[in-house]
Amino acid sequence: PFKNSLAASSCLVEARFARMACLTLQALLRASSLLCWRLLLVLVTVAAAPGSPVARADGGGPIYECGPRFPSELLSDFDLAYVGFFKAGSSSFRKFFAWHPDVRMYENPHHNPLERHRLEREFDQREAYRAPQVRRVLVAETFSRLPGLLTCLHKSSPRVKLLVSVREPVAWFQSLYNFVIWQQSTDMQEWRVPHGDIAPFHEVLDGAPFGNSRFTLSTAKLHEQLARTIRACLQPPWGTLARGGARQAHTPLGGGFNSTSQLLVVDIDSLSGPRGQQVVATLQDFLGADRPFPQAASASLTGGSAAASNTHREHGSAHGFADLCQPRFARNFTWLVDFFDDERSKLRSLLMSQVGSGVISEAMLDARTSLC
Image: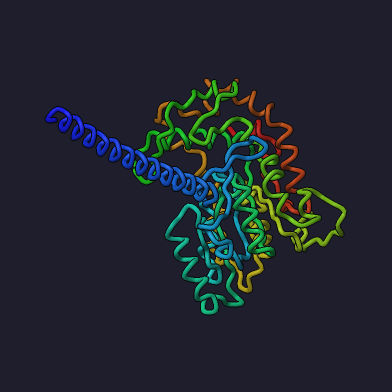
């Protein structure tokens, strides 16, 4: 009897343990299932959120979209947007617009949480912040690489005008490469960006990418980038990015620029040339402000600082720095000038079209003798 009782007790204990193990396993399965669903929900939310990369259908790299976490109405009521390119005078244009008493300037809210908070506050009290004489200007040069955000901007502000500054491709590419080198080596913490191993300049000319954004020689084909990201957001005929069949409505400023255009393309180096004030007058007309820009604002563009600040020759001590005007880079310089010959031709045609300022810099006309 004792043995039978002991066996029965043992079976009962085993059954209880088995049941507890079974219940524990069921709880773990339910918890893991719930965790999986929550993880899936997070992934879907992040994929739709601004600032998160979304795979492009054409395989051309990530784009950024407006989503539930960024209401598109925050980009409403903008009069003008500077949409690229960086290393083409964006800092000078910030100074230029900041000088005007009737311009309220904003940075990219997708990259700047404080700017987003500012837009949310102003949207909630928009009746107090809107004034007929005020021009709302968005400065976000990276929009040329973010077609999703540009589409969102145009949807929310259908009458917004787009300002683009371009540079001679060889000068722009050299400036971009040296800027990445400088970001890697600078002691200024607010500018320092680790880029890993940056390919030497001669390898970049052979097709190697560089920097976290995987820049290549093709990145300097600015006309192609504009055609891909800007043109799709513009109404005809400005979406052609060239002289179209619309009636000419020349301004007294010369060139082929049509004052009704939604797009203005400016050669940043032309501002420091003899016709720089003419380009400033075109910008004034394009913005549509009642009062002119102060003289100090014009000086920020015409004083030569925009082009000079992008040479990065003051950072020439950085390891890997490429100065195409040095004798050891002479062959690279000649090769690059020839390589971008067709690109310069396209940019010149664009600058003289109905969406261009009508003024071309010496570098864009003759890079071989003007850059060095």
